[in-house]
Image (cartoon, rainbow, N blue to C red; front, top):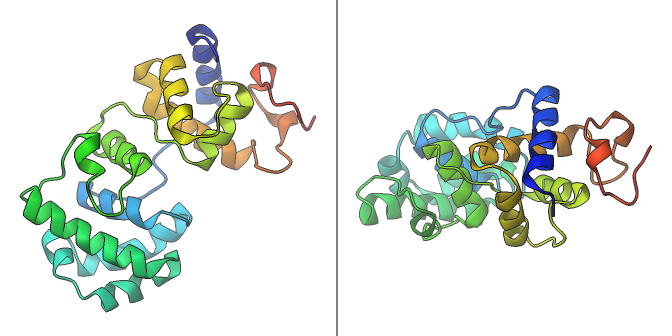
Length: 210
């Protein structure tokens, strides 16, 4: 576990290293919800490539709820697992329309009741759709957090709790993005570029590649 004072120094160094922004492109919360579901088991860039066509044809929850599944599958096919994803986003749209009166709920519990939305996805929607402090934990966040020493467990929920305890709440959303950028640019899963790491002095990773 890293104390809050040390954590603040780590986050500040990463802020100097990276200019971060949300990797998924979206214009509104409808687009965010759909993009988050599509992003499972694929890259954000791949989702960004197919989402404009999807959103042009189905611009809101109401139109997507009535979409032809086969048509949706064809549009999102390149994101992988497209059969399930198409079912999920059409069902999600229907649930928003019929259960939540067309309004995306702003609680984690309600968001996780939506088809295709787990805890990480719910946290993404809370953070980037509503500006509610949350720390979504993906593979990059979990890896970076573990190597630095924030968490001993690899379980996403345990990593999330550890990060929330060590990082000040006002930095939760930014920290999530910083860890993603760091994981993609320097702290690779294999052969991390430790010699270029701005926070190497804080890192507890045993197999440092210096």
